[in-house]
Image (cartoon, rainbow, N blue to C red; front, side, top):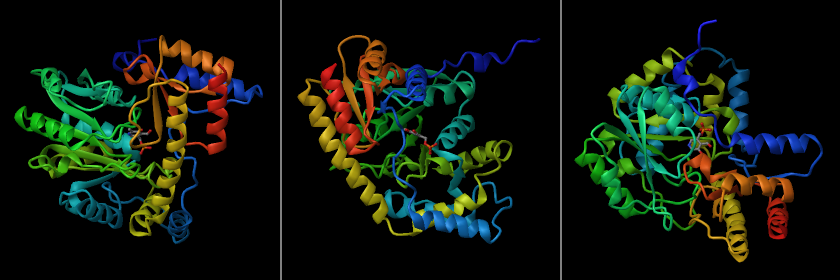
Length: 376
Ligand code: PLP
């Protein structure tokens, strides 16, 4: 047989897989494993969103839709961004995608050429690098300050002659850090000075605790060079619906739409009607979930610090990022083996020596997990 794709073979499997597979194996054998490796809200999708999807399905919204997404949704997204995110967006500057992940992949395909480089700020979510590599581009990593998880002047040194795009993720998965105004300003200055595109992944924008989320595209001169990515998975507990979106200047959206036309066509038609209800309906459900995450964070971060751990700021998303002494992979394995608590090693996010513990699980589970960690 002829050999398979070298491009795909070169993409490393995720470092999260070993621990999560081991945790699943143990659970299947009847071990009471507490998983803090979850990357999704533990809430059900709010009823009015499900109802709107079911209504759409029952009235026959089961056919192909426009490849950019149903107009009711692209319109609602353009209004939402214009109203909430500090920059004006037209309906034809919106593309509805199969989750934020698909928007990230399509954006990279739309903008990058082989030989271009993407600048990734570590710790970073696991899929940015593979998406860049699928688009044929190279990747350069730059560490955020491990004390503050903010950007400083050293970012300038990381920009090389081939750098074409910088990926920004605030609030961050895995660190929970929210970039402050100075960091966002610095990134914007560097993008403008070096003619870089920015991909701003704002999927956790609604999950902030006492901090303000600032959209990169709202800064002067940035809307014209920023692809803002967002979606419904985290804010509305809709991970399985696979609805996300990108907002960008028309030429970029047109390129992304071509990728979409020849691959997925568009997200599921009746699911998009649910997403319209999410944006047009009451936002009380979002605030209720945010408050519950904040309550858990207010328990889990002090509890970890009481055990002597240093943690990242945890101002957003639903992750505690915990500094450990030694090999994070080995420590994650030992927590699983000895405490039956599954966490994600920081190596997966480009920062060995840290563990990511998700607090998207019940308070009861969190209390039990802290008790077990204390014992090991
Ligand atoms: N971006 C970040 C930072 C994430 O943590 C995730 C999911 O874990 C995604 C994007 C993908 O979200 P979606 O479910 O909308 O594809």
